[in-house]
Length: 122
Image 1 (cartoon, one colour):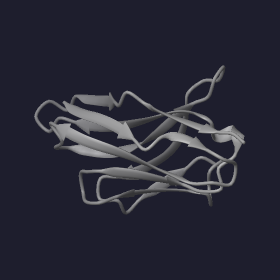
Image 2 (tube, rainbow, N blue to C red; image 1 turned 135 degrees about the vertical axis):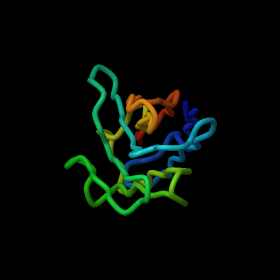
Image 3 (cartoon, rainbow, N blue to C red; image 1 turned 90 degrees about the horizontal axis):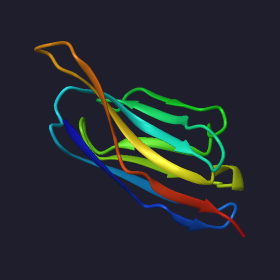
Image 4 (tube, rainbow, N blue to C red; image 1 turned 120 degrees about the vertical axis):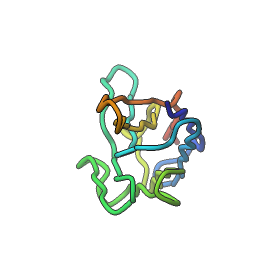
């Protein structure tokens, strides 16, 4: 099972930028998609962005289109989230995830990182 660790969060002023990283280790084979969720205080966790294993297909939440960019260094790892023009609504804990399917059993699984805090405030 893949082990995920996020980094790059912190405090930033409105209009600023942050770059989050998600490092994968352990069993990194057969990862179909990776992506980012976020959870703001008092709100449910929401999907922010996803990327295919080859990095050739991406999806974004409407609220971050044109401001956030998800990317990968290679087929498996690491995954980045470049966040520009940040505003207060972007505040929350950002979680990296990876979806895997075993070629032997067909069993699907999702692994999560521990999360990294992003705070946008003046």
